Amino acid sequence: MFDQLKAFHATVRQGSITRAARHLGVSQPTIAAQIRQVEQVYGVELFHRSGRRLEITETGVGLLPLVEQMIALEAQADIMLRNVGGLFEGHLRLGATGPYYIMEAVGRFSNAHPSIALTCRIGNSEEMLQALHEFRIDLAVSSQLNDTDGLERQVISTDPLVLVVHRAHPLARFEAIDAARLADVRLLLREEGSVTRRCTEAILAAAGVAPVSVAEIGSREAIREAILHGVGGSLFPRGEAESHPDLRIVALRGVDTTIDEYVYYLKARRHSPAIAAFLACILPARDEAAAPRMRRATAR
Image (cartoon, rainbow, N blue to C red; front, side, top):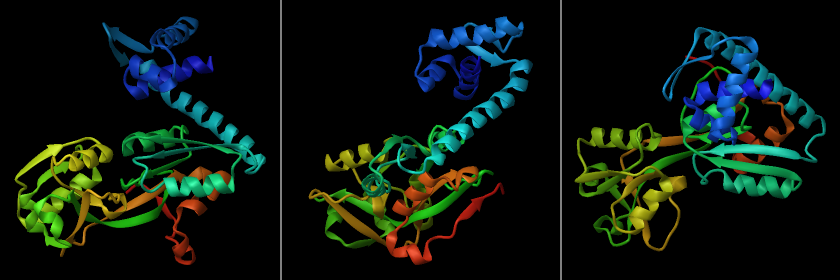
């Protein structure tokens, strides 16, 4: 019955049977059948159904936190059993919003612990932090500042924002420009909710300028390709501005806006050998003696 309850949980949390099936890696009919099985066995109704629309019932609302406790206990049992054997074998699951701050650490970890299987998921910050809460990943790397109770984080990088343009762009010949010159750039922005976008908009507002035009593109990699094709320019954290013969990096004079990149993990799991080993790989070695002090994420 546990699989059936997890199907119910995924449907509530993902918002639909379609997304729940994708989330659990099964078919939609399987999810629907598992939910109906729970309802038939116990003679209850977990969802009100109107066509394809599902609305959780009062019984479902009461059941949800109990199922979440069961899922958490299952994950904790798995963690305990995997940790008993140390780091000789096992599986570390990572989540990140991009490859820029994580792949070097992945390489160091893989070399130090070759028998540990690694999975790395890429998604937006909200998806990665939700996956962390649901024990689907062990660590999440994100620039979003999240103070949810139960999370701990450490800063792994602090980068200024820089302008990235094609080498043929008129601003490419400058090493640094005033923020007011951004008015001459067709700016490529991330989606709403992006930390980089919020910082870009704050810089523009402080400078009192508006770009000549903007375009919204949903990933850093896609923005980089757009710049290479001459579509426009964009503000990147310096650590994400990859070197390329056709790209130029231009500093922003008089702008002190920086973006922190964090690694998150669950407070209850901070003593996991695998997590501790990966943290040792991702925190900058040069700052080891003065590594960022662990900050417990507590609700404000």
